[in-house]
Length: 221
Image 1: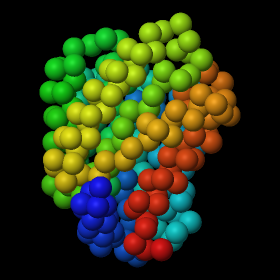
Image 2: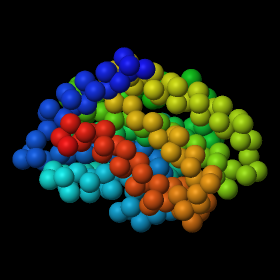
Image 3: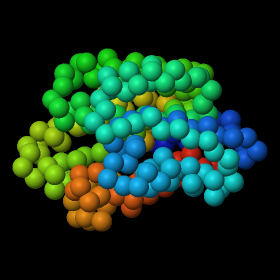
Image 4: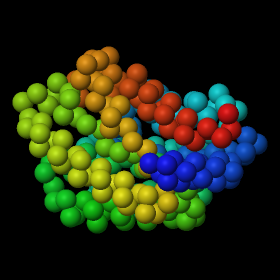
Protein backbone atom coordinates (compact mmCIF):
# COMPACT_ATOMS: atom_id res chain seq x y z
CA UNK A 1 0.00 0.00 0.00
CA UNK A 2 2.80 2.44 0.87
CA UNK A 3 4.60 1.65 -2.39
CA UNK A 4 1.36 2.32 -4.31
CA UNK A 5 0.89 5.71 -2.64
CA UNK A 6 4.48 6.70 -3.33
CA UNK A 7 4.08 5.66 -6.97
CA UNK A 8 0.91 7.72 -7.38
CA UNK A 9 2.46 10.73 -5.64
CA UNK A 10 5.42 10.67 -8.00
CA UNK A 11 3.17 10.14 -11.00
CA UNK A 12 0.97 13.11 -10.13
CA UNK A 13 3.96 15.32 -9.43
CA UNK A 14 5.43 14.67 -12.87
CA UNK A 15 1.95 14.91 -14.41
CA UNK A 16 1.32 18.45 -13.17
CA UNK A 17 4.86 19.62 -13.82
CA UNK A 18 4.06 19.69 -17.55
CA UNK A 19 1.16 22.13 -17.11
CA UNK A 20 1.07 25.80 -16.20
CA UNK A 21 -1.82 28.20 -15.74
CA UNK A 22 -0.55 30.23 -18.70
CA UNK A 23 -0.91 27.36 -21.15
CA UNK A 24 -4.10 25.84 -22.56
CA UNK A 25 -4.96 22.33 -21.42
CA UNK A 26 -6.39 20.40 -24.37
CA UNK A 27 -8.49 17.53 -23.06
CA UNK A 28 -9.91 14.57 -25.00
CA UNK A 29 -12.45 12.29 -23.29
CA UNK A 30 -12.98 8.89 -24.92
CA UNK A 31 -15.71 6.46 -23.92
CA UNK A 32 -19.37 5.52 -24.00
CA UNK A 33 -22.58 6.59 -22.22
CA UNK A 34 -20.69 7.12 -18.95
CA UNK A 35 -18.57 9.77 -20.66
CA UNK A 36 -21.10 11.56 -22.86
CA UNK A 37 -23.57 11.59 -19.95
CA UNK A 38 -26.60 9.69 -21.27
CA UNK A 39 -29.72 10.68 -19.36
CA UNK A 40 -28.26 14.05 -18.32
CA UNK A 41 -27.68 17.44 -19.88
CA UNK A 42 -24.33 17.25 -21.68
CA UNK A 43 -22.97 20.09 -19.54
CA UNK A 44 -23.42 17.87 -16.50
CA UNK A 45 -21.33 14.89 -17.65
CA UNK A 46 -18.09 14.31 -15.78
CA UNK A 47 -15.69 15.60 -18.50
CA UNK A 48 -17.47 18.96 -18.63
CA UNK A 49 -17.67 19.23 -14.84
CA UNK A 50 -13.97 18.35 -14.69
CA UNK A 51 -13.02 21.09 -17.15
CA UNK A 52 -15.19 23.53 -15.21
CA UNK A 53 -13.14 22.75 -12.11
CA UNK A 54 -9.91 23.31 -14.03
CA UNK A 55 -11.27 26.64 -15.29
CA UNK A 56 -12.14 27.75 -11.77
CA UNK A 57 -8.58 26.91 -10.75
CA UNK A 58 -7.27 29.25 -13.42
CA UNK A 59 -6.56 26.84 -16.27
CA UNK A 60 -7.57 27.59 -19.82
CA UNK A 61 -9.16 24.47 -21.29
CA UNK A 62 -10.22 23.19 -24.67
CA UNK A 63 -12.08 19.91 -24.55
CA UNK A 64 -13.45 17.33 -26.97
CA UNK A 65 -15.66 14.37 -26.13
CA UNK A 66 -15.72 11.34 -28.40
CA UNK A 67 -18.30 9.04 -26.85
CA UNK A 68 -21.87 7.77 -27.26
CA UNK A 69 -24.32 5.39 -25.63
CA UNK A 70 -23.80 1.76 -26.55
CA UNK A 71 -20.23 2.08 -27.78
CA UNK A 72 -18.01 -0.94 -27.31
CA UNK A 73 -14.22 -0.98 -27.52
CA UNK A 74 -14.48 -1.98 -31.18
CA UNK A 75 -16.86 0.88 -31.98
CA UNK A 76 -14.69 3.42 -30.16
CA UNK A 77 -11.66 2.30 -32.17
CA UNK A 78 -13.65 2.77 -35.38
CA UNK A 79 -14.76 6.26 -34.37
CA UNK A 80 -11.23 7.29 -33.41
CA UNK A 81 -10.02 6.20 -36.84
CA UNK A 82 -12.78 8.13 -38.57
CA UNK A 83 -12.05 11.29 -36.55
CA UNK A 84 -8.39 11.24 -37.57
CA UNK A 85 -7.34 12.68 -34.21
CA UNK A 86 -4.00 14.45 -34.03
CA UNK A 87 -1.39 13.69 -31.32
CA UNK A 88 -1.46 17.09 -29.68
CA UNK A 89 -3.52 16.62 -26.52
CA UNK A 90 -2.42 17.68 -23.04
CA UNK A 91 -4.69 15.12 -21.42
CA UNK A 92 -6.67 12.09 -22.58
CA UNK A 93 -9.17 10.03 -20.59
CA UNK A 94 -10.58 6.58 -21.34
CA UNK A 95 -13.67 4.91 -19.86
CA UNK A 96 -14.89 1.95 -21.90
CA UNK A 97 -15.95 -1.68 -21.63
CA UNK A 98 -19.37 -1.78 -19.98
CA UNK A 99 -21.14 -2.49 -23.27
CA UNK A 100 -18.75 -5.34 -24.03
CA UNK A 101 -19.71 -6.85 -20.68
CA UNK A 102 -23.43 -6.09 -20.99
CA UNK A 103 -23.67 -7.76 -24.40
CA UNK A 104 -21.72 -10.81 -23.29
CA UNK A 105 -19.00 -10.20 -25.85
CA UNK A 106 -15.77 -12.19 -25.93
CA UNK A 107 -13.48 -11.06 -23.12
CA UNK A 108 -10.32 -11.87 -25.07
CA UNK A 109 -11.50 -9.56 -27.85
CA UNK A 110 -12.05 -6.84 -25.27
CA UNK A 111 -8.51 -7.24 -23.98
CA UNK A 112 -7.08 -6.94 -27.48
CA UNK A 113 -9.17 -3.85 -28.26
CA UNK A 114 -8.43 -2.25 -24.91
CA UNK A 115 -4.66 -2.54 -25.24
CA UNK A 116 -4.97 -1.03 -28.73
CA UNK A 117 -6.94 1.86 -27.22
CA UNK A 118 -4.27 2.41 -24.58
CA UNK A 119 -1.64 2.52 -27.32
CA UNK A 120 -3.77 5.07 -29.18
CA UNK A 121 -4.15 7.19 -26.04
CA UNK A 122 -0.38 7.14 -25.64
CA UNK A 123 0.03 8.26 -29.23
CA UNK A 124 -2.43 11.14 -28.74
CA UNK A 125 -0.32 12.57 -25.90
CA UNK A 126 2.90 11.97 -27.84
CA UNK A 127 3.78 8.95 -25.68
CA UNK A 128 3.81 11.00 -22.48
CA UNK A 129 1.82 8.31 -20.70
CA UNK A 130 1.46 10.17 -17.43
CA UNK A 131 -1.07 12.39 -19.26
CA UNK A 132 -3.47 9.49 -19.82
CA UNK A 133 -6.25 8.89 -17.26
CA UNK A 134 -8.08 5.56 -17.35
CA UNK A 135 -11.27 5.17 -15.32
CA UNK A 136 -12.67 1.91 -13.97
CA UNK A 137 -16.07 0.69 -15.17
CA UNK A 138 -18.98 1.62 -12.85
CA UNK A 139 -21.03 -1.15 -11.26
CA UNK A 140 -24.47 -1.03 -12.87
CA UNK A 141 -25.65 -4.09 -10.92
CA UNK A 142 -26.82 -1.76 -8.11
CA UNK A 143 -29.24 0.13 -10.38
CA UNK A 144 -32.99 -0.55 -10.69
CA UNK A 145 -32.34 -1.38 -14.35
CA UNK A 146 -30.53 -4.53 -13.19
CA UNK A 147 -33.20 -5.76 -10.78
CA UNK A 148 -34.16 -8.70 -13.04
CA UNK A 149 -30.58 -9.43 -14.13
CA UNK A 150 -28.04 -11.87 -12.69
CA UNK A 151 -26.33 -9.38 -10.36
CA UNK A 152 -23.68 -11.83 -9.17
CA UNK A 153 -22.62 -12.46 -12.75
CA UNK A 154 -22.46 -8.73 -13.48
CA UNK A 155 -20.26 -8.10 -10.42
CA UNK A 156 -17.97 -11.03 -11.25
CA UNK A 157 -17.53 -10.01 -14.87
CA UNK A 158 -16.98 -6.34 -14.08
CA UNK A 159 -14.34 -7.34 -11.55
CA UNK A 160 -12.47 -9.23 -14.28
CA UNK A 161 -12.77 -6.26 -16.64
CA UNK A 162 -11.57 -3.75 -14.07
CA UNK A 163 -8.72 -5.96 -12.91
CA UNK A 164 -7.42 -6.14 -16.46
CA UNK A 165 -7.95 -2.41 -17.01
CA UNK A 166 -6.01 -1.55 -13.85
CA UNK A 167 -3.13 -3.90 -14.63
CA UNK A 168 -2.68 -2.70 -18.21
CA UNK A 169 -3.03 0.96 -17.23
CA UNK A 170 -0.45 0.86 -14.47
CA UNK A 171 1.88 -1.28 -16.58
CA UNK A 172 2.09 1.66 -18.97
CA UNK A 173 2.64 4.22 -16.21
CA UNK A 174 -0.77 5.78 -16.90
CA UNK A 175 -3.07 7.13 -14.19
CA UNK A 176 -5.73 4.64 -13.08
CA UNK A 177 -8.78 6.21 -11.41
CA UNK A 178 -11.13 3.93 -9.48
CA UNK A 179 -14.77 5.09 -9.59
CA UNK A 180 -16.51 1.73 -9.23
CA UNK A 181 -16.87 2.01 -5.45
CA UNK A 182 -18.45 5.45 -5.76
CA UNK A 183 -20.90 4.16 -8.35
CA UNK A 184 -22.23 1.61 -5.84
CA UNK A 185 -23.55 4.43 -3.64
CA UNK A 186 -26.45 4.65 -6.10
CA UNK A 187 -27.91 1.55 -4.42
CA UNK A 188 -28.81 3.61 -1.33
CA UNK A 189 -29.01 7.06 -2.90
CA UNK A 190 -31.37 7.26 -5.93
CA UNK A 191 -30.36 10.90 -6.46
CA UNK A 192 -27.10 9.61 -7.90
CA UNK A 193 -28.97 8.12 -10.87
CA UNK A 194 -30.52 9.80 -13.89
CA UNK A 195 -34.23 9.42 -14.65
CA UNK A 196 -33.57 6.28 -16.73
CA UNK A 197 -32.62 4.42 -13.50
CA UNK A 198 -29.36 3.25 -15.07
CA UNK A 199 -26.96 6.07 -15.87
CA UNK A 200 -25.35 8.47 -13.38
CA UNK A 201 -26.96 11.78 -12.53
CA UNK A 202 -25.29 15.17 -12.36
CA UNK A 203 -24.54 14.49 -8.69
CA UNK A 204 -22.70 11.25 -9.43
CA UNK A 205 -20.71 12.85 -12.23
CA UNK A 206 -19.80 15.66 -9.85
CA UNK A 207 -18.34 13.11 -7.43
CA UNK A 208 -16.24 11.62 -10.23
CA UNK A 209 -15.10 15.03 -11.48
CA UNK A 210 -14.08 16.06 -7.97
CA UNK A 211 -12.09 12.87 -7.42
CA UNK A 212 -10.33 13.19 -10.77
CA UNK A 213 -9.56 16.87 -10.33
CA UNK A 214 -8.34 16.31 -6.79
CA UNK A 215 -5.82 13.76 -8.04
CA UNK A 216 -4.71 16.07 -10.86
CA UNK A 217 -4.61 19.33 -8.92
CA UNK A 218 -3.32 18.05 -5.59
CA UNK A 219 0.19 19.40 -6.04
CA UNK A 220 -1.03 22.81 -7.25
CA UNK A 221 -3.17 23.34 -4.16
